[in-house]
Image 1 (cartoon, one colour):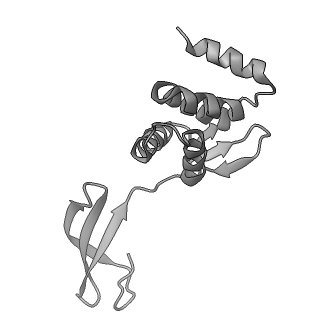
Image 2 (cartoon, rainbow, N blue to C red):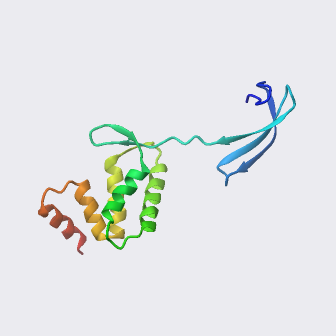
Image 3 (cartoon, rainbow, N blue to C red):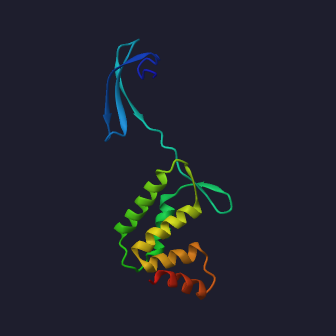
Length: 149
């Protein structure tokens, strides 16, 4: 670690402790050249999630885009914004927990539909109609028949 005061590269760690709810380590260091102390923080590197689209393109995961699509499906239903936020949080947590940091848009869509199916039938069918690209009313009828016990 380079000393911010004299730019010397050798130091010793005087104190280490966890901070930011265990998400970082705070280290007090002392420069072996000038003797001044400084603080550094160590974080786990967050590898961003990449979405593989149906046509093979790759793009970074966008929470806002997912939130917008789910909000659109839930428009004028009984689903609250808090429930939508919670759903997106759960999805993001599921995806972030995957060993592979690349996920297909198909897997995301199927996961969204699973959550929406439990949350609200209307929102589920709306999302499914766009995601599965319904062509006519028979596609809607088929999907609705699957919802009825």
